[in-house]
Image (tube, rainbow, N blue to C red; front, side):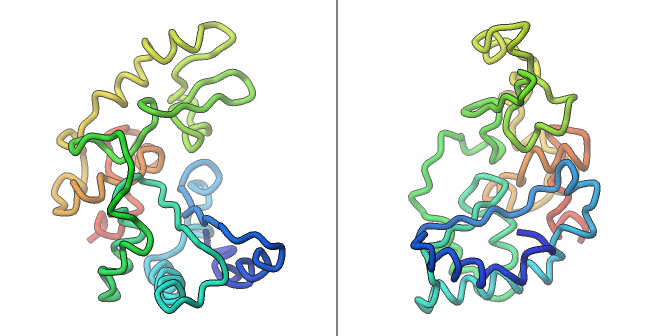
Length: 213
């Protein structure tokens, strides 16, 4: 979901229903790669995000949603800022459970970032380069290894990039997130997006409006 397609979301959902597609997920834009290079032209402002989240939430609450819809945040937690902060701003925070179930299944510990990269997941690009997740593919400095030169087992077990991802805890976060009272609920957003803006795997997710307040 971005500035480019935000005005066509409902129309798209109606079209998908006409194709008998009833289960749909919208992923919020990650500010990596070209999206980071063109941030101001692609990423929703907080006011725009609030407008979209409000419309979709009310449709869901009122039973007017044409399909079964999920919103996929870039950070993995029960309270991702991308959904929670717009709802809180609108006085609608009680509806967070419309998007995030209290039965949220995760292997992450309470003191970990909301990111499974290098822990439960990895991604391999067309050249054999291994990354913690698909959102990191544009960042060559986060290559954990290459399957043409090493076995995937060796990369998984011994990569210093993966080991750094596993060692990092919320208490090590740098930047505005370190002083935020939502840190252990939000889990500091997306590591790929944080790295794109701070060049640190334990940096703050600078897309969050609280990071600039």
